[in-house]
Image (cartoon, rainbow, N blue to C red; front, side, top):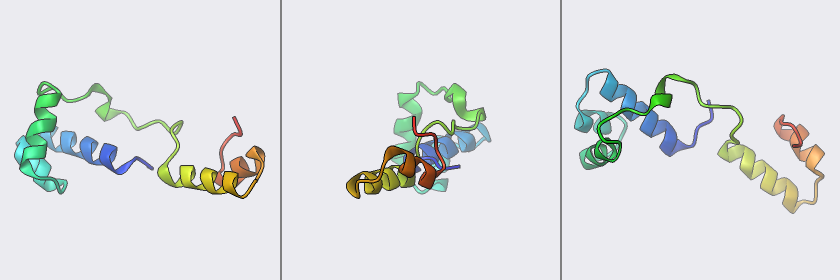
Length: 91
């Protein structure tokens, strides 16, 4: 699963909260300051996002795929060649 780090951390934070950890404990468990967990919890109104139990879509490009695309564009590769290199559709 190629999630941006922040999104993956936030998802893990909420999974820990749903498992019974306090917001502070969940924040510490994912490597954040307890205050960050408090902030994330209150920004969401104390309600875990509904998308937690679904796997993230593969429609989104990962950071490494974006880097590959950028490098391909810089080296004047065709869109189709770049797409083949990262295993994606040219569209």
